[in-house]
Length: 305
Image 1 (cartoon, rainbow, N blue to C red):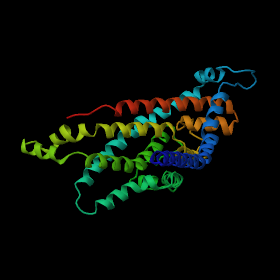
Image 2 (cartoon, rainbow, N blue to C red):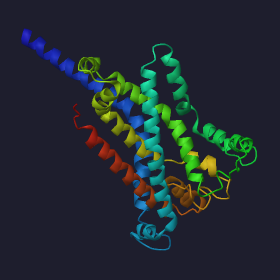
Image 3 (cartoon, rainbow, N blue to C red):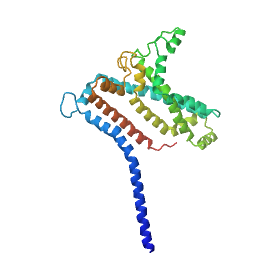
Image 4 (tube, rainbow, N blue to C red):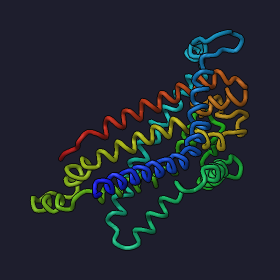
């Protein structure tokens, strides 16, 4: 009798688990179909389209061969690399300095964190237009300051030598708060016992920074560097709002601010060359994938003093 009851209970338990699993899959099927429809299928379709050349039949590497000879694509790729070289080191340095300063503040540290983090939370479009007004050659604040100092005024966004630096300055201002917050989290994770032992040994603050703080922040620095690389590879909105129409062409002047994402947009939605734009998208995807794999490999390493 007891064996019969035990078997019945097991069957009821299995049926209950099966019903729960079916219910869970029923709830998951809609978001899964949504994800496949707007993510997976368009990605695969773009990948297939990248091997199609206008005016040719079948699949070929024509778009990728054209890319190797495309001077504007090479310039956009170089600009993207320059954005990374200019913005990431400066924003990491400033973010670390601000984090170190806030970490030593005992009162109202939350206020300083919010104030420095606000630019990162603000709409990119709104921030870009505010900076565009600052760069205005006639009524902009920057030229007004130069005029007050009796210095020559500049055509900030119309000068090929200055335009990329102007966009980079806005990127640095916007991203410093994010770097600061991540560095603060890294600083909070360093055990205080290390500093107490260093003080007993007679180490000063400078030696403690290079001997304790900086080595233990290596994973944080690597993480922020990789995130900065991915963000510069995807930079689009800032360039569109800062340079769009200011110098006659998107990514101008003379393509001096154009990035890979901007060039992809121009090919796909201005020139309606969707096949070539898809090939650029694949290249951008591969670059981001490489950076992500590097991040996973480096962050898995252990760091010791």
